[in-house]
Length: 242
Ligand code: IPE
Ligand code: IPE
Ligand code: MG
Image (cartoon, rainbow, N blue to C red; front, side, top):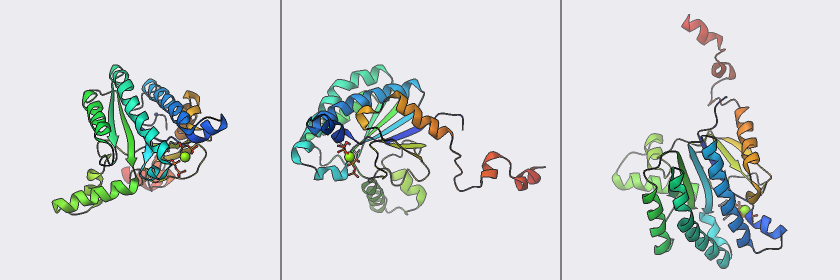
């Protein structure tokens, strides 16, 4: 492969351990995580990535201590108010993906406002998955179809998913050394190339991103076909064409 991935998805993990290593409260790690995310958005813009999707808060993260949950909500509100002008200046369109109902009115209106004010931007689509779970997404898509009395097919479900506005991710990165999906993009990652980085999210810099992209570029994506078919060396196909 010679082209950079069009869509990169990231499980931004390791903020808590980064803070722990420095004898800081976990929320200090999340704050540093926001800085790392800003750097990542800039790096994606510079590298011509079309879509960046990040996992910021999972359906299961409500189970954390209440002060960490409220700290994360406050951080989201702060990041929204601070970063939107910069996103606009850089041509970034933001989408929030997830169940908004459990979020406060104030946060909900902040999300809607950020989406509206960046809606005209086209350089990079930036999906922030917040109160998101892959299982939630599949269930909400099925419910949507059922309520409209529509048949459930792969295509109709795909169109009802929360990420229907973008193609599936090409490269899925998880930082923080864990080798699991943790309920992220269960449907959409069917054919994503996976890359696991031992770097904690606050330390995930341009070089680490380039490493992930370089690893991606060495992969052969077969989508169920044989290597010979994909590389154009399939003799039966060549004979058929002659
Ligand atoms: C990821 O970092 C951010 C969120 C889940 C909000 P963690 O907070 O999970 O960091 P670790 O895994 O405890 O180090
Ligand atoms: C996944 O990380 C969710 C986010 C990065 C937002 P977690 O830290 O919550 O995942 P587990 O609990 O280790 O699987
Ligand atoms: Mg974690």
